[in-house]
Length: 302
Image (cartoon, rainbow, N blue to C red; front, side, top):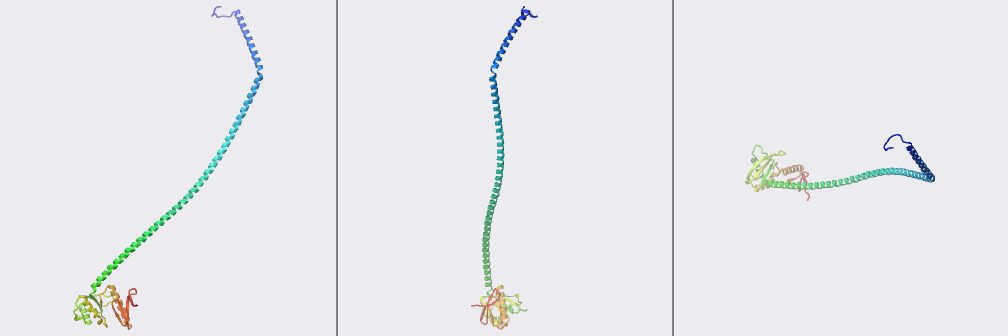
């Protein structure tokens, strides 16, 4: 048969194929028998190995379960400890907050007490400072007032001294009625009663003053002190009349002399012998002086 020819196989080819298939089947059977023999001889060893493997697997599973249980217990323990820790922390926080609040209250109290003490201290300092300033101001004011008082007193004294010097040559006539006459004619009438009309006394100026008592008051200004002395030395010749000659005095001095004359009149009505001077008087050989507080005469004590 030529190579590459197609068609039905020949009988010889069929027999050859059958032989090859038979020999292959025998070899295959022998091989299986050998494997079966080997399998029977190792069956006992495989059973022990399988048992060991199962036991190892069981031990491994048991260990895994124990490990899992331990892990669960540890987790539960950790959870309990965590909760306890949180509770402790929460409680400690509460305690710390309370302590902090108490501390803050105490600090506030101490601070307010310190502030109160400091404020009181500062207030006391300010009060003391104000008192000291007020005292110094009062002393200064009192000093100024005293200085002003002395200045006024000195000024008043100088004024009175000047007024007295100017009045040294003046005198006052009380009780002489002027009437229709000139004031100088009334003064000459008084001079005539005193016995000095022909003594050459020159009247520089004379005018009538108003009096609270309603009496006639004449102010006379002379040219010299000697003429004034002559008049005053002879005024006692008017005793027993209603005419009086006095020095020209200040208002307070005139008020005093007026009160003294009133006192003398009262005492004379009682039968006393009274003589009036400048600021003093004599009654029944006893000297009396003017009391400025009582505005009346007191007996002088020696």
